[in-house]
Image (cartoon, rainbow, N blue to C red; front, top):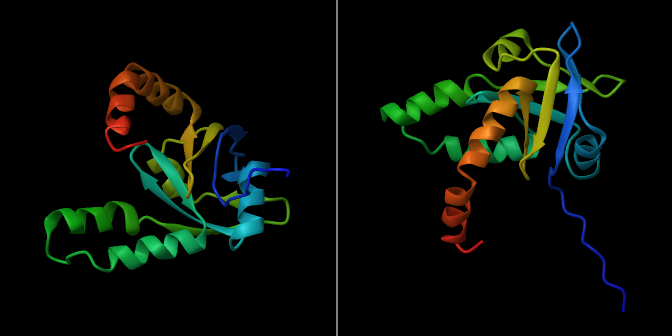
Length: 155
């Protein structure tokens, strides 16, 4: 009996790319294939920390459904809505497989020409290359602690 790996709709791996002078980004083929095979072929992009995060519409709808349950009075909930939800932009693909990242989002993430797209299973991050390299160095410095923390939840 032959066993194979079941294909699942997850964003995995990293890809280097460039943002053109008009702010268009060609999404990596492997991420685009996940979108085309399993989701609506569009993205909801928002800022999270020092990068942008891109969700398929179906995953973004799940986030919004959960966010609807947040308190409109609690200061942390309002801050989260202000930082993450209010900054989202729906971005459609053009005929050449590119998405236009709006200027405000590019400014928020300090995106220059060279970027790195990082698969995060249900979404992918879009980092300015130099910012990603700094974050990667910080993550590697904390790798032992991170692995212990993750092992503590049974992974």
